[in-house]
Length: 470
Image 1 (cartoon, rainbow, N blue to C red):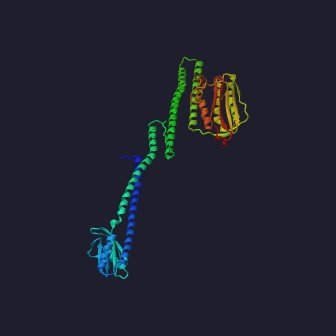
Image 2 (image 1 turned 120 degrees about the vertical axis):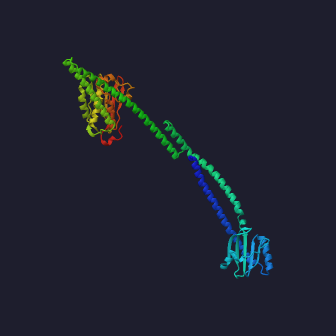
Image 3 (image 1 turned 60 degrees about the horizontal axis):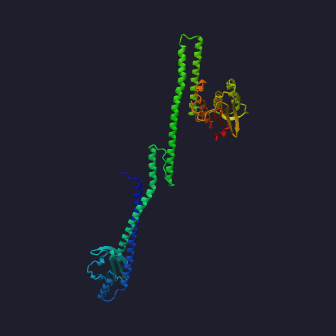
């Protein structure tokens, strides 16, 4: 049988409090009985001492009459013995002729002291309490007894009062424990319901627990977990979509040069071609092989950067010297298009991977040359505190705003036909982004159609400045 947590808390609380109430009540009654018994014994002792002193000294008949009158007044059993002979043993109006007075435990104990008491069952009377005293001259013995039930009439009345109070306390405790357990378990039920809703797929669901307790903290933790899980699922979906796009793009990018290469190889197998045609087809086939080689090289490069297989080798070097080397290799193409390439900067030390920075500069400057039909290209190095801002700006065609969020995605091209015609793989800006992020920075872009584009990122000037750059 499954018992809910609220019922468990209620029953546990009720059992503990009930046990405490019962123990307290039982102990109270026990102490009360003991105190009443001790008080009764002291009172009987006082009465026996008074009888021992005040009993008449004359003839036995006078002693008997006096004892009968006193027994009615005190409602006691009175026994008086003189010189080993029982003169009177009376209770209320009854003269008791039974023997064995001197064999009673309280009288027998007088041989060792002047007073004694006992409790025992008497036929027809029930439990009786006795106190016996002996005179110092060993001549007179007085014993007084009373029914025990008369002592505990008040105890019986108080017992019912105590039992009634205990029952009322238990009922009040049950009500209080139910209210408390409900307040404790209601947030737990809310969290359980919310967790089931989240487990069923509603990751946007939020658990609301207004108590500022550990349960409220637990609800917040579950909410954060659901939010993090929702973000991870969204990221997985995004990555799955990107993966599908990536596979589609890879297959498309590989398929075109492969088909072209297949066609050229088949043409070379023809015996009707002239020597000049064979050389031309061979050159075209070689260009497609080079295109495939660049494509796979770029894919391997991105994989290394994404999975951190290629660790950066940072060093302190002059970035302006590297800019000059890169520009000198690209300058002939820029001059062929009539572009002016500006790259004069003062010597600028940075702490970075020199080879990787060379890849970044090559990609950015080549893109600027490829997409600028006329005008200027600037490569700037701007010192900002402990960082250097690297900028590549052109006066080219620019990029429409709808393309900007995706220009760093793999295989994404703004002008697909022109990119393929000029030999691009569509992975250059993705590689730039990965390398810059591996350096702890972020590549930014500004562009307007017809106004040109500007790309920039930051590098530290020394190892200690690497932290906190963005």
